[in-house]
Length: 114
Length: 111
Image 1 (spheres, helix red, strand yellow):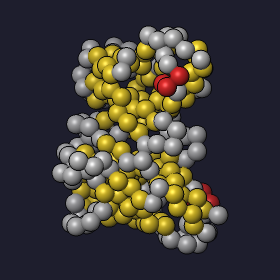
Image 2 (image 1 turned 30 degrees about the vertical axis):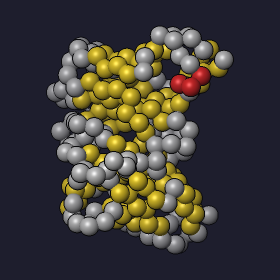
Image 3 (image 1 turned 135 degrees about the vertical axis):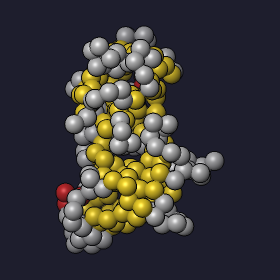
Image 4 (image 1 turned 45 degrees about the horizontal axis):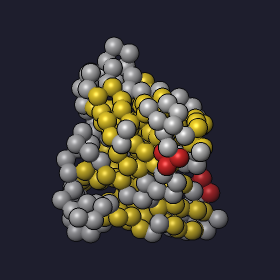
């Protein structure tokens, strides 16, 4: 059973471009969480999704950021018109049914905006 | 709201020294508590957890006890190794089912 797969591992974008980050949860997991880690800081919650539904997006900026978890395929975190401040590591976690069980994290996507 | 506070790092120790990383939390009721570890360039790995008061989580020589009276979940290890060098995150989960993390504590162990 493969772990949580994120790709790409590293992504470089110029200011104004779009960034798409992908997360394939572990097999059998229907809950996906996205977190952002700024340099030398902790992880900040962004969004919680179940298949085809956004459950909690309280941590996601209102503009330029969106997330989806379609019925088929990976979860996508999309950042439009990236700015330098978006440079961070973005981590995805999945769990079978709520985080009181256990969350498994991917290795992250490190986004650099130049 | 719910929150986690960790001691600031870095914590610098010699090999075989005793480790304590303090963690306290603020939450109503009884959250579940976790310690995650992040090695350089990697994602987070669950180190240990405790789901109710007085539970002790343990793994790889690390321990932490859920103390409701002091709202704490301090991480301890009796004898650290160079390979333990990493960033350690304390976290909690409460009703909303999202992990809330502390800011992380970097541990550096020297031979």
